[in-house]
Structures are given as structure tokens and as C-alpha cells.
Image 1 (cartoon, rainbow, N blue to C red):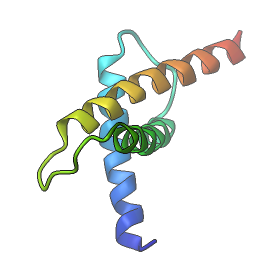
Image 2 (cartoon, helix red, strand yellow; image 1 turned 90 degrees about the horizontal axis):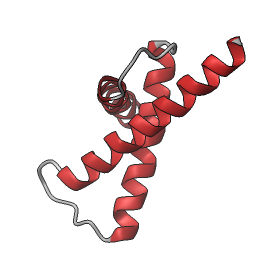
Image 3 (tube, rainbow, N blue to C red; image 1 turned 60 degrees about the horizontal axis):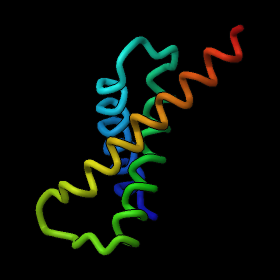
Length: 89
């Protein structure tokens, strides 16, 4: 694992997490750091699911994989936001 791959995972996680957060309606009481973590996890799980399903890796943007990652990020942000709200009550 190189510094470039770590930085790439952080950047991709931030983008995926932000897209997931934008697509989830309502206000989420989680910070940007937690959004990035959820995005990184969603990106990793989405890639693993895409590979298991046999989604071909292309030299450009893998749209099917990206959609899976964003959907997982929406679910992840919703779960984390719900847990965060539940801990305040």
C-alpha cells in the first residue's frame, strides 16, 4: 500500500460519501470526517460486490460499480446518522 493509494482512497471516499450524503433527504448529524469514512467503506464494499458479480473493469469510469458505491454510501450515511441521532436521545 503506497501513499498514493491511501490518498486516492481518501479522495474517492470523500466523493462517494458526499454523493451519498447529498442523495439522502434530510439533515444528517454527522461530520465530514465520518462522511469520508462511510464513503471509503462504501467504495471498498461496492468494488468487492462488483467483482463478485462479474462487473467488467474498464479503462474509463465503471458506472455500474460507481452506482453501487453511491447506493451503499446512502445506506451507510443513513445508518450512521440514525445511530448518531439515537445516541443523543
